[in-house]
Image (cartoon, rainbow, N blue to C red; front, side, top):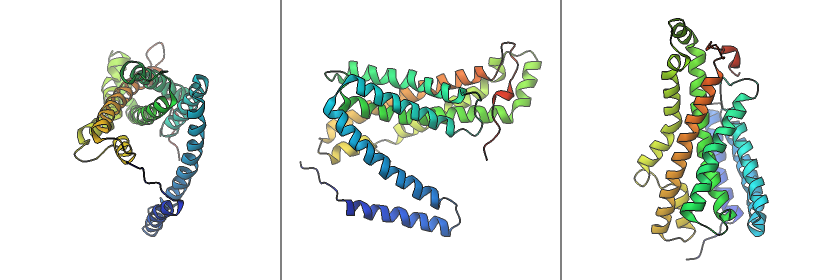
Length: 267
């Protein structure tokens, strides 16, 4: 099966629909017209550049270049996690906790999947490693950012409740326990919903891309199941690790709530 290539003028038709959406939202006074256009422009520029980078990376196939690419992806994801929080941990902790959590969960699951399940030779073959890591990091980033934002927002709003619990003799784990659990659930819920709706409500992106690229649907289905399971595992463990580390940072060695370790709301 031959893959149908797309001309730039055909992509321009799709772009015109995005412009129409931006104009419509502006007329409706939604204040998202400019962000839509900026995001669309970033999409074109970033994906075009990454296409060139990946072509060069696939041609070289060196472990050092794959590791460098993976490191850049991780650092950018860590920055996005920090930027999406309304109240963030001060002193670089928001970036550090998010990045380390994604590294522990995303990289470990990616390496395990490449070495044990897929088994390319070598295991870091960029055609497999980079797309898989990208999907894992992207979804883990969403889970970690949602969970940390839910945690810090709850602590900021309910600090009086937490302090009252501490004064009544509860440990810091018990005082913040329900907020931690709710934050972890918030980070896992998007992937749970995606798995529940896959194949009935939606056809996931990787499966659709493989089918459009000419792969048999049976092969595309197996890869999509693998990807959704690994993404769920990475996102779940990443959310739990981030919330655990973030909640501990909010208390000092004497188990006092340190609300000063959270920044004020942005904007």
